Length: 207
Length: 314
Image (tube, chains in turn orange, green):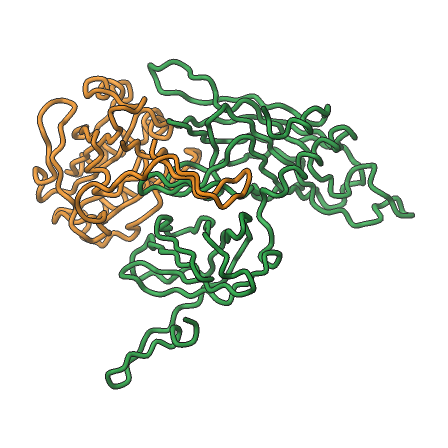
């Protein structure tokens, strides 16, 4: 694990304890700001074949960073919130792409068939589940957590970057699903009012 | 070995060890909980205990204050909890109280966290053991020394290589007995150095906090003053509603803190009314909270650009 400790809480020393060098960003530019073009990708699907963002040109696309080893992801699927959001979005013509950027040496990593099977009991309704074990696509988007959501408009621009909703504990029945709100505004031809929120969950397990 | 081992040797009747519940991924079996133990203890009775001195009327000689309690969390080796602002990932612990009528509990009070950088991710973490304080205001008119009971559920996310979420139920009986008070006091004294201090104790003050535009984002600039302003090495921000903090972009140098913020509602949003967090100086975290003033826009006279804020303060 590439983690650098900046400040020790126990002894309050200023000494830097470097456990390893930080991971380098994937080749390319900084992650896109809201309003900028979404980076293209070509990733292998757990069901076979390769999918790229260009395949969905002209459609609204939701990207969901996911890892079934993360309890926050598990909660969203077990409670049915994520499958329900996927189903609602797809019924509106949205393409919902789940991406797993867990590196192959991490204990949460699963081979494509096993990864697909991990979600089966939760009845997911995503359009496709893609493998990004080298993390290049995750880093290109700046995906930080699982889940971390991006909404891309029909012109290929990022219009939402952040959390799936505003309910970090999963106990608020009045929760607002930011992704569905953004999709509804896009379809209505309105600007996305809440375009950036803080994603919450486990860190993406990059290599 | 526990960092609180000497104090832990004392008995404590008022302390209840919690029971935990946590979910686990299907098909992987139940993993051992990373939370070994949670205890809830009275750290400072606030003058409400029977042993506090009484005046002639039978009321306390000194007006009683809030009762400070502490959640003592012990984790398995290598696991950590998160600060009030977990950073780019993780979840801060949350407490759900069941208190007697009229009682009110304040927010969790955290020790200064460790800052971890993992690639582009910044997180603020607590190593085990973790002591989280909470101040409880008893109901108005509560008779002096009146016994009461409370319970709490601590919701937590603990991470090592992977993460586990769960919750632990704990109970509290008041008043504490003498042994419990002694142990709690020793614990509190042992960890006092880990908690944030007032800014004035660090020889620091906030000269001003300004917000300037940086594309669609805001760039907050906090100017520190005082004899130790130049020794400030980092800033750990508290969470800001309606903004995403660019933790990796925070810079603290030469008595000035800069912090990028992305507004949730787009570039037309005003800056936050105030920012708060911990300034790290000499290994200690000092609390700051500062109102944010908009940075005056630069204006042009002839061919010269005049920035009134820069000309006065940089």
